[in-house]
Image 1 (cartoon, rainbow, N blue to C red):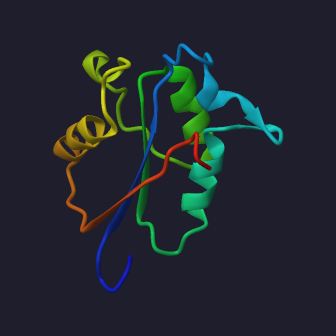
Image 2 (cartoon, rainbow, N blue to C red):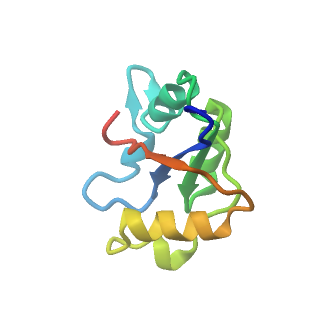
Length: 111
C-alpha cells in the first residue's frame, strides 16, 4: 500500500513463445525466469497482491511456488502471439473481485 492506495502487481507469462520456447521458465541463475519478478514484487513493501496471468498449469505451479497467486488460467484468445499486455490486464481487472488504485506490470523477460 502506498499512502492508503492499494497496489496490484500483475506478471504476464504466456507459454507459447515461438522464438525461444518456454522462455518464461528458462533458468536464470538457477531459477526459472518467472520467479524473479515474483520475488521482486514480494520484496516490495508497497505491493498488496501479486497475480501471474498465464495459460499454463506448469507456469502456474512455478508462480505459486514462488509466492504469487494464479486465480485462473488465461483464456485461449489472450494466449496468442497477437494478444497485448493491455488486453490481458483488462481481462484480469474485469475478472477480479477487488478494486485497486495502482497497477504494477512486471514482465518476466525484463527482470
